[in-house]
Each structure stands twice: as C-alpha cells, then as structure tokens.
Length: 294
Image 1: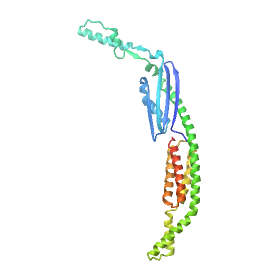
Image 2: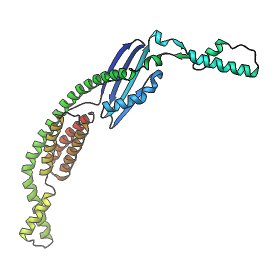
Image 3: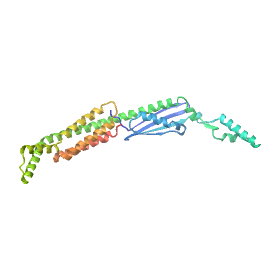
Image 4: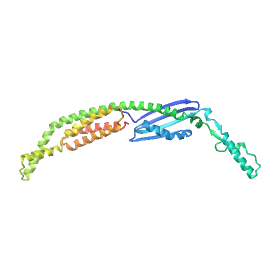
C-alpha cells in the first residue's frame, strides 16, 4: 500500500464550555517526530497527546495544534471561597498574635493567589476529558490519513510509470548485451593471445579458455540484469500489500540503483552506457517518489 507522509486533517466539536478543534499536519521525515501545541489551560495534556499520536502514525513529522474557544460562562472568573476563607483565618490569627488593630480588606484577599480562578480548565478537565479529546483526535487523524492515502495513490501511479520505463529500458540493455557479449568475449580473448604472444608465451589452449571464461565473468552483466528485473517485480508486490512499506521500497530503489551502477562500471559498449544513463534516471525518480511514503 502506498501512503504518503504528507497530509492535513481537522476535527472540531462544540461543548457547553466552548468549541475545541484539532488540526493535524504531517510532512516527510526519515523517522517519527511528534510536535504538540496546546492552549495554556490544557497544557497538562501534552504527554497524553504524544502517547496517542505515536500510536497513530508509523513515520513522518506530525504536528498537532489544539485550539479552544471558551464560552462566555467558562471564561468568567470564579471565586474560590475555601481559599479566601483560609487566607482570612491565617491573617486574622497573625493580626491577633501581633496585636494589630487594622481590619482585613476583602479587596486585598481577592487579589491573593488562588482566590480568583479561571474556570475553563476546571470545566474542561472533567471525567470525560480524555475520551472527548481521544474521539476528536481520532477523527482528525482519519481525515489526515484519507488525504495521505489519496496522495499515496497518485504516488503509486507515478512510480508505476517509472517502473514500466525501467523495464522497457532494461529490455533494450538485455537485447543489446546478448549481441555484444560474444563479440566482447572474442575481443578479450584476442587481446590476451596477442599479449602472451608478444611476451613469447605459448599458452595451453584449455587453460587459456578457462582463464578467459573466468575473466569474462567479471564483466558479464547477466546477473545484474536479472536482479533489477527481480527488484521491479518485488516493488510491485510490496505495493499491493496491506501495510505501508515506504522503508522497504526505498531500500529496493537503492538496490536497483546499485545494480545499475555495477552494470555501468562493467560495460564498455557506448550504446548500453547511454541506455543505462536513462535507467539510472528512472530509478532515481522512483526513489524520489517512495521517499514520500510512510
């Protein structure tokens, strides 16, 4: 299956305390990297978001942004009576101990830390907060994955065209090599005989043929041609599997390029060399595409 690492998805829901929205975006990355941006009031959920997101994605740089528009009721200040009463008792006790006569100002008590609380965090942090955010996150992730699968389908189509081009070009290489192989072998054998003759050496014919075959095997490209063909078939097979396998496809593209480089280093035929330039270009385009896959 082809699943792109690039996508975007959102989800939002309205509650009595306000409206929450989650936006997920992902881009290419060699590994898995998670970034979370939350409103200050729910910053304690950051670790929870990291755990959930790591379970939803296999690879890529994923950024989650959560925004909450608080309702008027949730944004109002709430008086913490318990904290205010505790402050009053402590201050009264100290005043009596010190023999002070000044009255305690309610205005001063209200400005003490913890007396006036912002209620949004309390309204949001109910028992169902995680279930609510989990559902919202799952919907945003599904929207993002729909986009990634759609983009993956386009990548699969592009890769398929490049694979077809690679096969077509390698068929030309195979045909050209079939005709050039015997001529190349005869050329090498003739050069060896001339070199030995100039040195005054008369080689044993059977030993000479054996050494010539061994030498020719070092520049024979039949195995490399077969391996590229096998890699192309495996490429298509992996692409039809149910799991996203971007790493495997990237590895196969590297192997195909390695085989192409080996062929290029072995051959002396100018015609085959020019074909291999196009083959390597097609393989490079394949690799560029699969590096976008999860």
